[in-house]
Structure formats: structure tokens, C-alpha cells
Image (cartoon, rainbow, N blue to C red; front, side, top):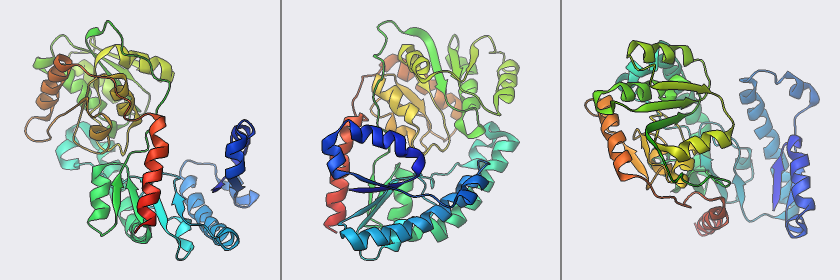
Length: 355
């Protein structure tokens, strides 16, 4: 196997290969980067996108050269998990190609959720959808048509590409290890939310859920940082639940996972997470998860999932699911263990090669 990646990963790759001679005999890294001048220009977060496009063009040239030398059976694009930008591997003609896991075409029903998005969130989501939809039509959709198999992060993404004639398998990119055990004694009537405090992550909905009469006595611990924190703190005060909503900020992963392991429920009403590993982590620990029927969380949290309907009173629906989840409890699962990956990837490769 030949892996084309950026030089910044060289040290970790070489370290892993040095400890595994069998792997080193089969895996051949190729380090590719753009000119030092272009690398220096990549300073802002959005510079990643133009750099990615140029890097994919360079990848296409490199992949064609490597294929001419080694005559590959299959190509697999695994970087960026993004379904609206192109892949340089499509530049290699007549080579079966797997794309993914990718996501992005899951969208927010903005009108339905505007109350919780706020003005900044609404503007961001409308702009995001317009930009990514246009980019997907000229970038992602042609890649999917060229691919022998598209690995979709969630059912919404899978549906987008299936409707356009692509062969699709739905498999999020979650691969988990080093998780704590479920606490023997849970914190009664305690829910945890963990994620960046951005409008679309749904922390405002989580606060409203705790303020609902059906959730009287419940406490919400919010882990994460982001621009929306001030608005969220004001919301908790206005709803009279600031004494039951605790903002704990950005904390180490181990601390957050331990809090989830001890909570009765993981409350995660995110609006368009393509995968949302934290839902898979809660599920694996055995903490029941309340979420919206959008994006990746319903799949990643299954079988410990309690999705709230978008019909009718959404906050009431979430509060009812909160109580159901607490009553039902959860069961630890190895569904998203890192150990599943070799078998999953083998299955994708077999499927792509037999098309």
C-alpha cells in the first residue's frame, strides 16, 4: 500500500513503522506538499480550502506517476471527510476508486430551528448551504459519479449520492478506544452536553429542554467553548435555570468522557453534525443519548439513542425523550471500536473491486 500524505505527518508515521516491521514492509509513505512559499501563505483557517484544492491537483499528478510505476488495484481517498470538494485521485484513469467516509450534505432545517440558531447562526447556515451546495455540484458530485463506492458518514449524505446513481455504503468514520466504564452510581437527573458552543451545535435547545416543565429538577453540564457562550448564559438566566445549567468550558477529553459516564443522559441536539464522535463515545460507554433526527448522531448513538421528532413542540419532544432515556438507561457497545476498521475496510475494497 502506498499512502500519499503531507510531510507534517512524517514523524508519527516513521515512528509507527519503526515499531512494526511487518507493517513497514507493506506500507510505503509518499510525502507531498506544495512549494514553501504557498505553505507560508496558509495562515488563516479558511486558507485550508484553497490549499486543499491545490494539494489535490498535485496529488493527481503524483498518483498518476505512482500508478504507472506500481499498477495499483484500487485507490482510496480518506482525507478531509468532505463531500463538496474534489479528489485528486480521480485523475488516475481506469482505476477503481473509493471515496470516503465523507459528509457535508446533511443540512439544517433553518426555518424550523431558527429560534435556537439566532441571527448569526441563521446567516451562517444559509451561507454554508449556498456555498457548499454550489461547490458540491462541481466538486463532490462528479467525484461520487467517478467512484466505485462512496462511504457516507450518515444516511442523509448517503441519500444525496444514491439519488444521483452512486453506489453507497453508510459507515461513519468513528473509531474509538480508551473509553471509561459506565459509572456504577449515576448522577441523578443530570444531563451532559459536550461540543463547541456554536449555534448549530444545539446547546440552546439543550438549555430550553432543561427549562421545560417535564424536566423539572434536572441539571445540565455544558462542556465546550465557542462564540455562542454569552448568548447561552443569557438564555439560561432568562429561562430561570442558571442555577441548573453549569458551563464548564473546554476540558480534557478524559474529564468529559468521565462526566458522560456518570450522567444519566447525554443531551446532544446538534443540528447537522455529519458524524459527531461524542455521540459514539456516549453510546459506547452506555450512556443513553437524546438527539435530533439529523446528521450522524442518530446512527452513532444507536442502540442507545432517543431521537426527538421535529414535528410539533420540539422542546417538549426533547424533554419527553430525556425522561424516556433516563428510565431506559443504556448498554455499553463495541459498535464503534477501532478494532472494527480492518473488517469494514476489507468489505469496502471487495465491493469496489467487484463492481
